[in-house]
Length: 580
Image (cartoon, rainbow, N blue to C red):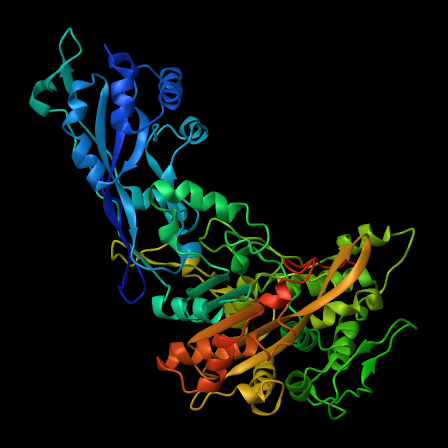
């Protein structure tokens, strides 16, 4: 028989205990050892209907006559005290002691994950596990299952000819002791994580905050969120089912990792960088804007009201659509064919970790979309029909076919903060206090953009806060570089493409020099960037860098604000993005 180890503890970056263990007791049966069973008496003792008991016993015999099978999982301490002595009279039945997780916080459910009993599919796939044992599911519990679970001990028990225990085999000389699971320290700042979840009450979306120099994830928030305590004990299955079948708010869907959205105007920083690298624009050139960008007789690409003409720094600060449409078009049209130009553009973006899986250490996540020439060739049925840069012009401002997760948005923001490199985002800080983690979480990944081209873009992002679209979101004493965004949101209703309320997006890093935090915020159906996402980003930055909030006006607005009325409208929710 096995002796089960304690699962490893989980701490945040400041050594705050997030997850420990609590005792758990399961009623087990070994079918071949069951004899002279008074079924009615045992069912009464277990408070279980006879039909249900017989069904479990039948399953146990099919599973294996010789191996333990769970009859009643996760007894309370009171139930265990009541049953422990009485179970001795029922041959083949015993109480097994394991441990359940004891979540010390009510936040970070999406980060921590949960454990549950293995099913037959898992047992068949992984012979390490037997029926009734627990395994990590989702989040850190799943990603670092092998480190957290420890090593089972083994006890060899002698039986007499009546199949009764008569003591350890050879005085226990072959027995092994269980080895406790390894403790894990996460990069998460529990205080920042909790604060971010509070800011997102009555809203949907995600926040990802990264330490640029290390790639460590400081906060990974999805909203709506749930308490990890809901997925512990005998109520776990009921609570999980309730959340799983909630197709409206989808609390089990991690929007920070798997929500694929049009990035909106934060993407303009990348358009600028690619334009500089491709030498199709310089920082002094001023481009005229007439309130829209007109191309090929199609519907103009509208723009904001601002002064004109604008250079690159001003174009970023004022978020000029005409400026970036011009730069994007020049980039594609620089080459002999639009296919060659599009693939060049795609490759630059891929070097920022976009359009591919980012390599983070969570078990879920999506790669977004950065279209290449093959994508458009298929869509336009090339060579029967030709396509040109103007057909894809919406890409220039983060609309069109481009899709990103909040994780990817935070990561490209970290790459800009670092002037051209990033370390793959990760949640692991150390295991058992050892500094050794996988090398992919310490190696620098370089973009295809030369470092010197980042300076004017960073200045433009800085001016967004000084004299641009985020000037009302400044935080005293902190120099923040950021970019507001309003991402268009469409769905199909009865086969007709219909525009819904825009999404609110924002990316930022701070301080301007030697940045300590890069952040992306996405608020579904949040109108424009500075209305919700920008305020949340400023508050998160101040909370992390200062530990307290001075912009209480922003905090009051966000904490008391709600988008529930917006979400109650028909067809609002996870966005559907139109492809040309």
